[in-house]
Image (cartoon, rainbow, N blue to C red; front, side, top):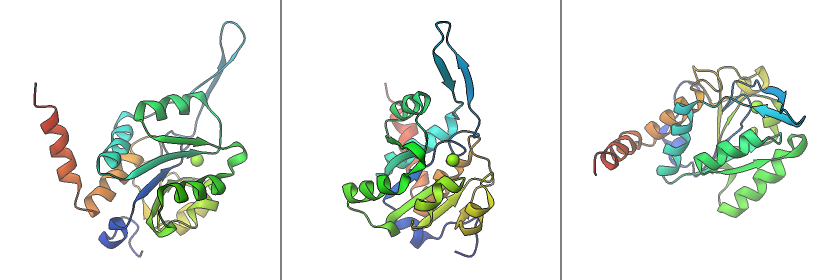
Length: 187
Ligand SMILES: [Mg+2]
């Protein structure tokens, strides 16, 4: 794709599965590390509410959505549960086997997969997907091969921007918003 700020309709329309990395994509890449009063470890992450709605909008548009993280974190599990999407947290960032299994499970091809990514742990999967999307704060190896680049950073609106751009390119964005408002206008 020549213009990294636009998603071509023919690319958007073939997408069936959307993969989000977590750290640096749905978060700003920082983690809060501390301990509980009884000495247990505690990890907190900040997720963006507008990004979360963007993830849900993709589900409402009948797309399959999965979070694929290269780290294990209870905060990520809680957020995935809240968003009601599949979540895989693979040790040592070995994401490719997990995504290959996901592709088989959903019966899709690599061309039909989109991914929003930020860093080199994503590359094994990112290089193979049909729509490569990057947050503005992604590292150079990811930005260099991205088809689409958000104007916003990870954890601060990039996921929502991507969701809006993908749905808009599929001519679904207005319908999803109207359906949302309509459902919340009834008693
Ligand atoms: Mg990341």
